[in-house]
Image 1 (cartoon, rainbow, N blue to C red):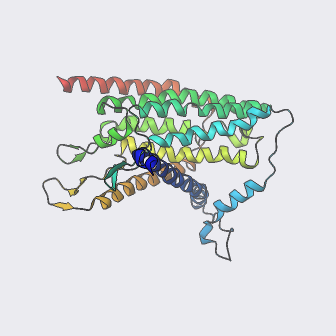
Image 2 (image 1 turned 120 degrees about the horizontal axis):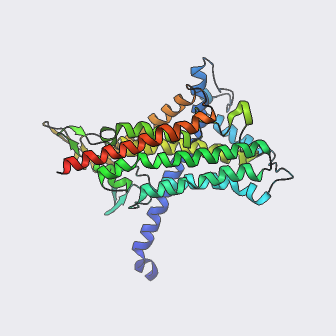
Image 3 (image 1 turned 180 degrees about the vertical axis):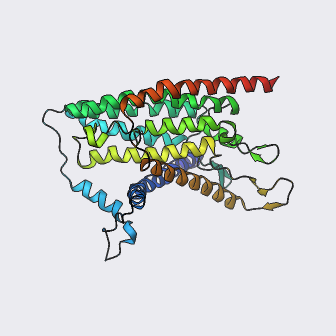
Length: 370
C-alpha cells in the first residue's frame, strides 16, 4: 500500500495514458475495418451494383456488415507463402515498416480538448508534442521503407519496379506535403496540433471561425493532392497499377498482405483526421466553449462539461468520416495518371505552388504586422 500511495500520480498517469491508447487506437482499427467495407460499397453504388452482401450470421447479413470479419478469417486461413529466392528477414519485416509508423502517428492527433476525471484534467490526446507536426512528417517518411523493402526483398522484377515507383513517388510528395503546412505554422505560431486546434477556436470579425481553411484555402487543396499521392491511391496508384505490374506486395499473402492493405486504409483515416485537425478546426464546434454555446451578439446556452466534451469528440468524428467518404469518392472517380505525369505534377506544379503559398503568406503576415 505504501508503494501505491507514494507512486499514485505516476500510476494514475500511466493508467490514463494506457486507456487513451487502447480507446483511440481501438476505435481507429475498428473504423478502418469498416472502411474496407465502405470502399466496396461506394464503388458498387457508383457502378450501379449491389456490392458485398453475402457474409451472414444465422441468415442475417445486415447489408454486408460481416464482410470485414469474413475477410479477416479468410486472410488468417490463407497460406503464408515466402518465395524461395526472397530475403526472408527483410521480407518478414517489410509489412511492419509499412504499418507501425502509420499507427504511431495517431499519438499526436487531438480527438478532443480535455475531460475532468476525479479532479484530474485529462487531455484527449495520447501525446501533446510541441513539435507534433514535425513528428508526423518525420515518422510518415519511414513508411517508404516498408514499400521498398517489400518489393526488393521479394526478388521479383515486377515487385521491384513497384517498389522503385513507390520510393520515387513518396519521397517527392513528402516534400510538397511538408511545405503545404508551413503556412499554418506561420499563422498560428506553433507546431503542436492541440495548440493549433485551440487557436482555431477564435473568431474573425467576431463571427467567422478562424479555421485553417479560412487562412489557407490554397494550401488545403495542395495538401489533399499531396496526401492522396503519398497514400498511393487512385489517381496516383502507379505503385500498384493492377493492369500493369500488380505492385510491390505481389509476392505477399495471408496476414502479411493484409498488413500492407490495412496500412493503406489506416492512412486514409489518418489523412482525414489531419485534414480535419489542420484546416477544419479539429474538435472545435463553432461558438461552443467550455461552458456551452455562446453565439455572437446572441444568448448563451450553458451546457454540462461532459456534454461539451462529447460534442467536441463527435464533431471531430463527423469531420473525419466526411473526409474518408470524400477520399473514397475520389478513388472511384478519377482515372490513373501516367508515371511521368505523376512526377511532373509534383516537381513542376505542386512544389512551385507550395513555395509561392509560403511566400504570399509571409508577405501578408509582414504587412499586417506593421
